[in-house]
Image 1: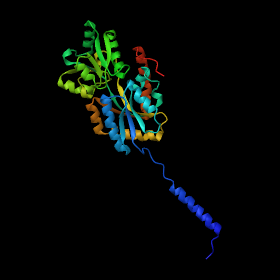
Image 2 (image 1 turned 180 degrees about the vertical axis):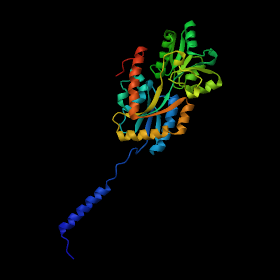
Image 3 (image 1 turned 135 degrees about the vertical axis):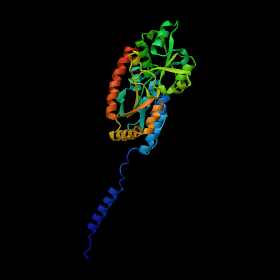
Image 4 (image 1 turned 45 degrees about the vertical axis):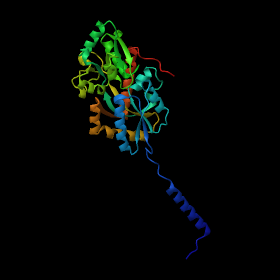
Length: 326
């Protein structure tokens, strides 16, 4: 048997060592390796939907999606937190048209360009609610009362410069009674309480907040502001059906800090789509007066840009637009 030289032995050992080294390099771990945090900007139905969405997404991602409340500033508190987080997919935001209203209200310099869209999930039409004993059945009834009264009507919304504030101002300006209205901001989820307690005369908020009160006969919804009626309150006409040229709908979706890797965004989008496609999720949203309207990131991005231009224009016309705070 032929002897093996010392040099050959060293070469074989080196080759073996190299092979072992290559074998020992672990495969790159796939996203997610740890829990994903979902920042929630508002309470009420926005929070409820986010909690259901995060719970269901956890099942598809294999790691928890943890909802965390960061409310305040019309969304600016939450947006600022997420923007300041690493662009790695582990910090996402349950966003909405508030990315534009908070910017144009002057609450933040951040805008939609600071975030990467993941997916559109749902849409909601704001509703105009009054006490049942007010006798008001239509938007025109409210306008007549505003003109005839000695004082101004108090109209509640979810915050100065918020989407519901924009909607309320648009409606009452269209009705020609903008100068007869005092706009009153209230805390998240307080619309029915404030209305029934007589502290405001009208509330502009999400239908889901008022459904139980409608069923109890204490609240009337006189209008919704989307292009179509809301299934859960099908008897309530749109503003346009009543001759008021206002058509505004809240969209809600997911976004991450700009610069988040595309494969990570795609994985989050896929998990969100699985939830949005489920019959159970659709049924849950319908009970809340919302509707599933899933769109992937590219289509969602186009909607955001279009809506930002529109809201900037409307807020300017209503005198609600301010320079963003630095």
